[in-house]
Length: 409
Image (cartoon, rainbow, N blue to C red):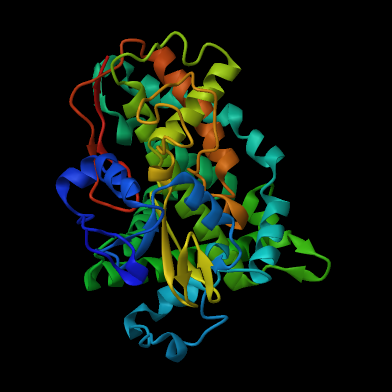
């Protein structure tokens, strides 16, 4: 067996290989069998597919998302970033997803003051009405691709409504979102990067205009609350407001669309007891958590070593990266009994679909709410729902989301 840095095992897998895109889980099983840490050759850094290691790394404060606050590019041996990426990198610098304490603590605290459980729960009736309207539109057609007909419109309308942005603007916001997150996918080209920069500039201009409007005419929406949020004399700067609004829009759309689509695909599999999965509130909660565990939308989350230290028996040096395979960890037999099986009645365990530690997904309550409301309505309104063809997944690793979800009823 070949080894990499520190004599770690090596793993050869092209993330863009068609068979891997459609089903990465056999590769994850092979990777997990190699050890706690394995060098994924395509990425060039150690990754882990084991639940205990991934969970510990997510909570380890000596790993972080932000490295340039503790080391210079020269010290790390990094070249200067490509000039054409400057606007995207400047935007990213204001995102709490990319920051570490104390900046992350401050940003997260201010966002949490606005993004409350009460604000999320208020959306429940609207999610139910929206799901009903979407199904009214297709019920008599007897067939549809449920991705654009159901899974995509709900998160877009919900996050637009939460932020107070016109739902009619949703398609444009989604287009910008797709272009921006594409830059994170494996093998992003110069054209993809330029499209991400253009989308960043356009989306930022759009949000700045919305912020100006909220300062003049505040409403009951989340964007108004973010504009007003303060902790003593501290508040979000305009750059932080723009980055936060875009982060919430991108995560609220990209993540939840994939979570909803992947859940429907799983629930259409043979053997799922449709009378039991949404029988009551507890059954619904278990079903939602199992959908998130079994096939989550985010598969790879990377962090940097902020100092020299040993982790999982491997010496990390400041600036080294580690890849945490959330979806692979969710199928670790050490953490879950019969983990490859989709069991909606499973007692929820410590899945990592939303991460862990200080970067645990701030939108997790909203995503859970959307699935818990939309999925039962779908299967109640279309009781004969079945797949018309095997689901197809997009070539978008390290996100996992459907390309099509053709169904009959």
